[in-house]
Amino acid sequence: ENFYLFLNAENKNIARKELEKWIERAKQSKISEFKACIKALENWKEEILHYFESRFTNGRTEGFNNKIKVIKRVSYGYRNFETFKKRILWCCS
Image 1: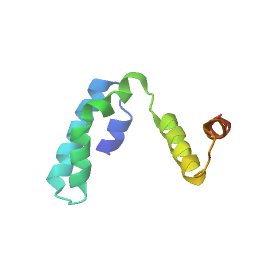
Image 2 (image 1 turned 180 degrees about the vertical axis):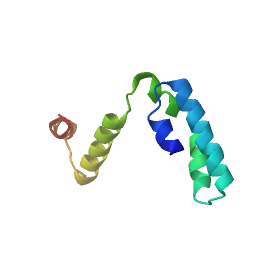
Image 3 (image 1 turned 180 degrees about the horizontal axis):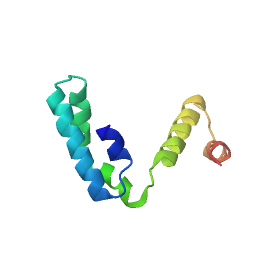
Image 4 (image 1 turned 90 degrees about the vertical axis):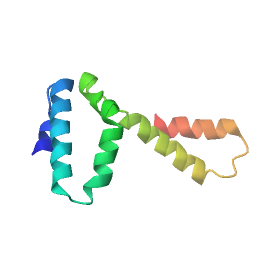
C-alpha cells in the first residue's frame, strides 16, 4: 500500500515522503529480497523522484536503444554503414 501511495503521489515532496516510508517499512520487514531493491532505491532516489516533476520517463528511448542493439546483433556482417543506418531508421520510425 505504501508503494502504491508513492507511485501515485501528486508531487515530488509527497513522493519523497511516501518512498522514505516504504523504504523504512521494507527495512523493518527483514525480507532478504528487499535488500537489493532498497539499495537501488536509495542510490537512485533523486533520479527516481525527478519523474514526479514532469511525469515523463525515458522508456521510449530505452526501447529504441534495445531495437538498435537487436538490429546490430542480427546485422553482423553489414559492410555498408548507410544500409545499417537505413534499417535502424526504418525499424524505429
